Image 1 (tube, helix red, strand yellow):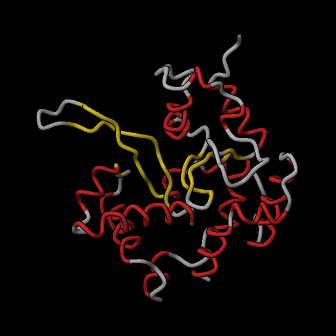
Image 2 (tube, rainbow, N blue to C red; image 1 turned 90 degrees about the vertical axis):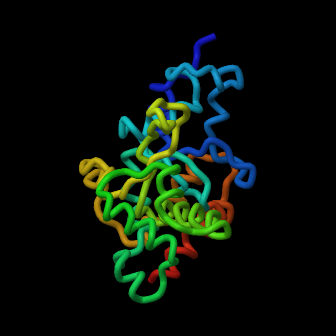
Length: 233
């Protein structure tokens, strides 16, 4: 049996435009599990283990990976990334959103952290560097998800977590500003679109590559993104 390998995965996402690892709510749209047998997972082989592909694809900038689908993580191909940005990235800046009172406290704190550090930030770092108290930890993590949904930040790969002696003991997800991470050529693949045009293009692709998926189900997959976008308009 031939394995479904990393290069096959990248090619498949580019063919579809975007892909989710799995989604129990939206039936019909292809997901990663449709192509990869269970025996390949958790093999720790970077060529055949899908668990490792998310970080590899983001690190190599072959695909974008992040919480793009109603807060759930998935992949977007270079040829479709600008469409998602036109669809769901607010037209007003983070500073304008904050000054207008439309931006959450932890979205702003996380954005300021990235601005001040001028580098990608690991999950273990931002949880330590942003004071939330015990009750604010979940709110901070939720803010990081929302910033991915609005395409202000993205996952940029992973980094080693170090113990007191400086030895790596685990991996942490790394986040960066989208404008810092995205390859400039990704933005020139498609002509600029209005919010409406971009959303319709995404829905059309969903329906074209799905089995029996209709417009109402397509809208369901992005209703949180639409609501968040509207809140900043």
